[in-house]
Image (cartoon, rainbow, N blue to C red; front, side, top):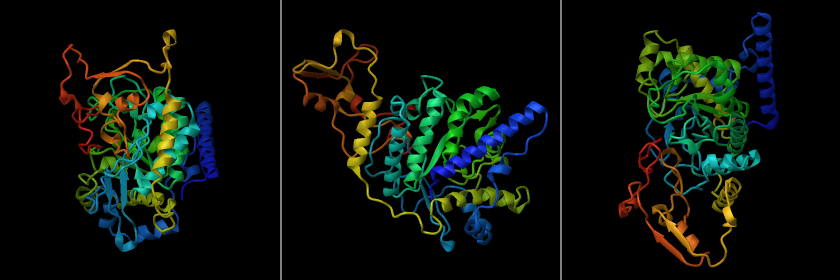
Length: 447
């Protein structure tokens, strides 16, 4: 089941103790004991998990370490089949950062960057509860969110999905949101670990960063997520200091496991795997959305002895441990709830109001007086742009166009599509499906 506050506090205390020992050892020139000796990040996972692990065949173990095709798809991003013979249920993994991304209706929450503008961890916790509740109601087990990468460039197409550029604020908010998500029984996945701060060339860019800025800036939010008990971590596409994030031992083992005591599992971003042995031994546990490297290739590597089976066992143990913690192995997880669209909409409205910031109000223009004459310009005035594209796209229960909403409250309202950057009238085609930050259609099924 999800961690209690006392469990989170104990984990945080152990992590701080381990860090203090390391600092003291460095100051005296001695060597510190590994932090995982205190946290038990890779010890046994309890009798139920160990018993299951002992009964699994190699093929069954490998099936738990990569994505597959869902025989009964719900429009989610990923699927892991489970092992029916031993009562291990499948896992369904859904985006996203501002609401549950499936083909059914869900609450379209304001973007996380707007949530951050409210500076309110308790509101972030309630935001997480809405997603956690709806995720389970919509048949999901794992949420591929929250995103906690810092905003480092204004051109990154997914800046709206994260919490801004302040590492302290991001850490406070991601911890609270994860507590909200997992308090409803949905496994949270903090992403994209690490330094995924741009979309251009994200599959190949090599981010060179020193240890101090890495830890004090980018990693601060990820460490807070681990302290809050996140069940999963998603590895990034990019390289960090010369090595792909999803096969980077410094990130996946030295920092995440040994220093912070993370005891969940690490999955790739979609198609972010690049190897079998290097990735698995470095600390990667699951390849998504398929098994290019962690399927037949892994089976062959174990068979020819190039990958010891204990690394497969380690990864499976991490996945099963989280499933056990959330009551998915013994049927103790609470029944799936019904959606509460009204409650979700109320939280969405509260977040929108709290995060709205008025920077200037020259000559007291706002609020507009009754009967004011208003011009609405642009294609999204008539067609609401409800959510971001790609992994942030949500099918809302209902969405009035801004133009209709303004007409219901204002006096004279005029509307035009307006002009483009070159002064030419915007064509009617501008009302076609919106594109995300990478130029993909929001309904293109992209993760």
